[in-house]
Length: 465
Image (cartoon, rainbow, N blue to C red; front, side, top):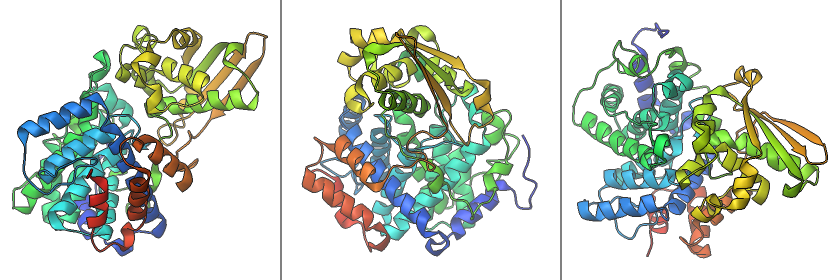
């Protein structure tokens, strides 16, 4: 690992930046991005409450019954804030519809915003504190995700959302709790002993990945609270010999943690998903939809779909082939590129409604999946991780061949969703959870965050009557 070499150490400098950042230091367009990401996270969390894994988490929380004033998205009663964060984070990741920072290969919203909301419940903070805490959390989580070298981190079996998310949540909560630089350093140090998240869920299509950002949010709050009480954590947790970067990766680069800090904000470098699926599938699905639309093709016309893919994505969405071409569960389908390609071809989209047991077992889907061929494309590697590009070629039964290159999947900052498109996503994913009147009220309260003295109206809007 390359060291940073600057006086004070990486962890202390990062903590000092987080503790010292003020709302006025953050550009207006960054705040605007934070507002959009908050709206998106609330929507996917509310929609995620319908997942079976979320219902079990709710049943578990009824048994635990931790009293408190923590806001549970789409919930009917408040609980201890740190446990509300656990639920909200798990809800937000349940549909695999939450935001993603490409360079970190991590989902910051599902870990950071639940911690932010819980910390605001503890302190009674208003909208500016809410947004500033989110900006700080995204900075820490995404910078660590980039520095850890996502491909190498995955190679060791770790999930960046769970590991880096714990640090991001600790920083976000710590900012709202008013930690000074020394306390923030300890909060990060404590978070490092809680950073967890294993990719073994892929082997059997289990639910543990959905749990990762919730546990990160929960752990981050604990770290911040302990640090506020004076509990110490190592001040070299990031760069130390046995610290995060050295222990969780080979080939990490600590220089990325502080690179352009205060000038580049990762809230504005985070993508919003238009499809309910692993982000590595989005470029190929965009390409399929584009080719089909631009050339007036029908599913019955297609003989073969050839997808060029990044190497890092292969073990996540393309291997083992037997599982990816024969998904057995919703989680399997979310991480199957052949399934995603088939859904994009047949339905022209990939929303939560398309990830059902009935569609997974569909003969029509199975037939299209047989037409999908995936190959590693070395030319794409030079663009990763700043870009997650892909190529698509569709061949027809009549001998036609249509190709496209997707440099930036829809939802990337370079190819963003508009507020109108985001509102459509929010209304679609929360239909059945909130009434149309409640959907509009939540949107209005989120858009007023930068001027809201308190969050009482937003919190009441998020919960069920």
